[in-house]
Length: 394
Image (cartoon, rainbow, N blue to C red; front, side, top):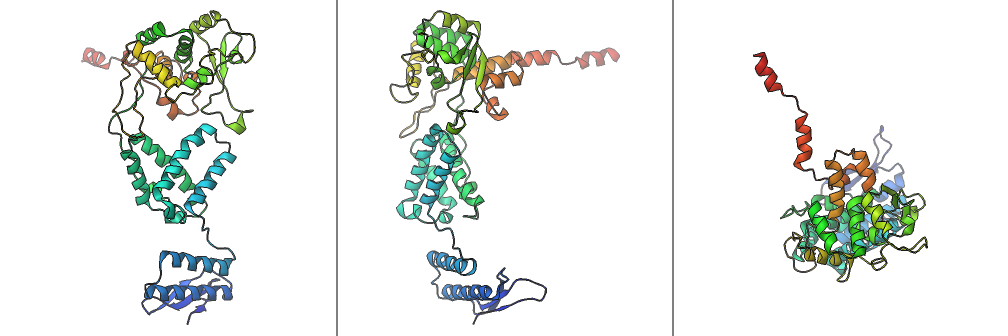
């Protein structure tokens, strides 16, 4: 029969019980109340009996531990399912003001992972999710045609859910941390345009797309942000002022930092050539205003057709089956790389290029900087000629 004992120098009671091998065992209950400690000791012995009789299933162990927690602490385990934790996590993101675009990117990953687990497993406790199940989901994403980068992004999103559960002590370890991301089979990196390519694009574009290209080339503005520009974004005919849709959180619009860029002569001349209604919210590009970047009739595909018309190789990646989208090294977003790289190659201070691009971190900014050899040549030209001096001294 289970009992309790306390060492004279310890405030905690020790449980004394018969373990699954039939031997006497002692285990600290970490409890100072004798009655509660005795309940814990009885639970330890009950679990040992079930283990000895091969009756201690996962479900039975969870139930016993839950009962023990309720008897000793008045509160049971967090037994919510993986599905419920995902739902709560999304609600917490919404409460923190996460933008709708981000939630839309996360939603298919959450739904896909729960579907991969299946009905029974997704309704089991989140603590039961294994690293093998996370790895299996990643591999299934790859088989469906996703790139290694896309599958890796899914792991990052899932990591957020499980880290949240770990911080709240719902799980002891994060299973995503045990899964290694796959290395990309091919290098898929966006490239900047050459000036000749940009001129070729302008020669085949209509007036509105010419404006879109010029704004991206000179300010680095993203596709949807450019399409949604209106008269109110132009300040005094000299400044472009806007909030990026990618980073503007719904509940922070009053304080969100704007991107402000001094417009180049090209842009000022282009705007002077337009006849824009005097209304404050009059769009600069009426036929493109409000259009989405994706879908068959979207802005991205329209720009791709301009590239083809200009005879510019988009440098497409491997064709993929299923859900994977084929990578294009040259796209509208490459104009952003072009602007940032041009500034970096002209020795503009990094603080200036970050301010113009709207980047808040060095890591994000570095991905857009493509330095050519002329920048290196200017630095190397300043190196001291020590060999010549050494020869002269000899």
